[in-house]
Length: 382
Image (cartoon, rainbow, N blue to C red; front, side):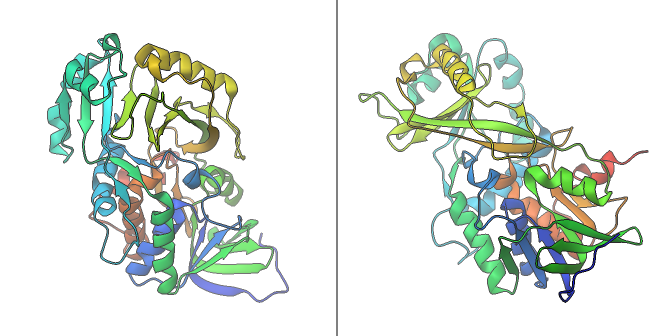
């Protein structure tokens, strides 16, 4: 039952709840498709307060999940060569990504290379000597082989976010920072809009792009009960040894040690690749998690173990049970559209996922990707 406000009720085509990478990319692609009566709501007073601003900001297309791997491959061309005039600065710094595998996993990984080529992902197969030549600190006992993806690397997330938003606004999309969607308006078994402290916004469609809060928003509206789970991910930056030039290294992903590291200026950024279940919040890094990561790093690159950490932070990555994004109108609640469960790949997949979502909203179908793989209907009771 909706609660009325004395303030005027405003009618819109689409209201997007959440101005992280999911919400702003959708706003951009909707505007590109001619849908500009769109309101983007963000309860924080600026962009990228939560997950979008706390990631390692990388494009790494190699992924064991075939759906995610394909989405990353489809999104990469936009990042490498965006439309003319889209960005003021380069979006992608192609430092390369090198995934290192030990003796236990390398034989099986090596056999996947032909299949990767069929989806457009070309990789270089490196033997231990070649991998160590790229990153000399690697311990030979930890490297049975490696796969390198030369075109991948660092994404300028601020430039990407601000460019999506700038162009959407130029076409008429409204973005309201510091305005929280306190409740969804549901009438006659259909989502009709959102309530905010400033009044009610009616819409043909409400998009849930709430990141770690997306699941709670869906539950409150009575949508399909999708158990989206936020998980903490930690990052640290520390100085490299003074005699060790790191600037030309690729991102190094160590499969068996469950960590990755990459150049960060003259230093090194490292992630323990932790996935600790948490309620939606402003997470803090764990000293125990960081210490355990350094012990694992000792197995693969002991020269990198630092005496001190320069910076540490954490963010939340939100996953559906099958670890695939949830994109589409809810099968139980018409008017409510999921754009959630990015699981840490929302930035690098935003160029394709934003277009897929816009297609579904504007036309009801898309030829860009098999939308059934992303549909919330996969979680509906049979």
